[in-house]
Length: 310
Image 1 (cartoon, rainbow, N blue to C red):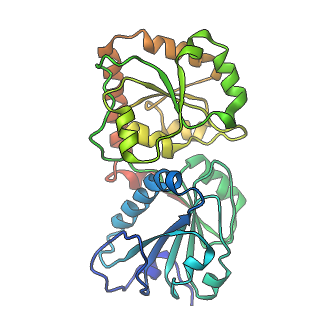
Image 2 (tube, rainbow, N blue to C red):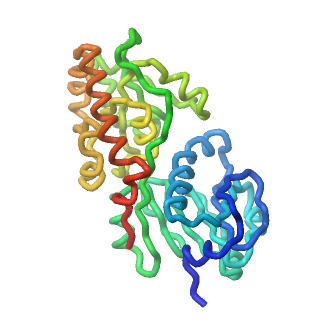
């Protein structure tokens, strides 16, 4: 008998949609899982993806569902998954699914990386519309889905009217972007203003860093990739941040039109300098305009208009 994602979750008697740390063994359950190689950072980084998946499932109007969250330290942690359950697996590390396949578990791989990773699963989901189109060309028998990152509801936002000094902030490490970093730091302005922040692995630290600040944020893709990192970008936009991004690809840039400043790397200094010279009121107006556009485009009510499926 052939099973798909919808038939797997149909018919369960569970009365609530829940997210728990420990699995409750029950047939017709959807499991969301990933490895715990770097537990502090990984759980925080995957949070927007998991929240988007949960909201997507809720939109299906299946009231009788059970969802379990299982951070995995080794493949044995997946043994409790029963026949005809569904597993949504996140991340670059992928375990051996052979035992789950023998149990007719329906497996969905959510690719969180900026490159194409093809695994023998029933479906592949991705955060990037550009990657989705590439997957369509490189896969035959798998269902492919572009599932965008949904706007996060948060009361913590940047405040460009504050007296906080403006800086250009890159969230993460630039070690994988060394050539780009060296080019930017050749500018006397960026040499003084560009800072890397890579120690924010929980909501409290993240919110404390951005609350009432007037930072401008920088996006640079990893060397050899060009997918827009929308997990990171959508979180920043949810906090009403102004973002300058190097050009990525035409598909993602069309989707993010009027939300970011896209430019060539050699023009980042000029874009940043022009923004820095604006008044506080002008910067706040820009942030408000971008945020209102983002909120309409990526809110849960409108997300179905963005999803694409092959």
